[in-house]
Length: 173
Image 1 (cartoon, helix red, strand yellow):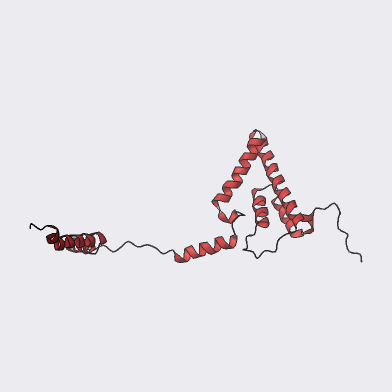
Image 2 (tube, one colour):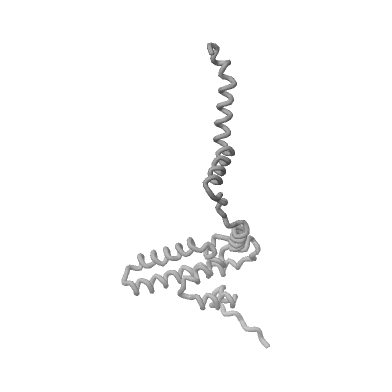
């Protein structure tokens, strides 16, 4: 049996069948741009081996072409100039990256997940301090808080210092 000969007209991306199938399934959608961005950017903190340069070039070309086709569809649907349609598509893509950091190919997926887990672990429900019941308890609580406040303690220290040192600065008294 002879092994199948590679097609000389095929692009480099076609040599990676699972990527080619995913690109074909997502063609014409915003999700394709996000998918390609995730492929091209290292989102595994250095654990990804990487793609051949020719495959990366094909993916960049397809991402740009996908955006142009989406802009053409929008231009036809809304009866606007291509430049305005392309700007709208591009702004929509940028807004999506800003709202969900996991969709941003410039942000490591592993780092985002690690930060979210850490935030969830350290975030605790803040309960308000218990309020004493009744006027006497409330007044006692107020006095206690006043006596333990830093400003009140500083004020007492200043008053005592002035009272003790005043005779030395006022020789006529």
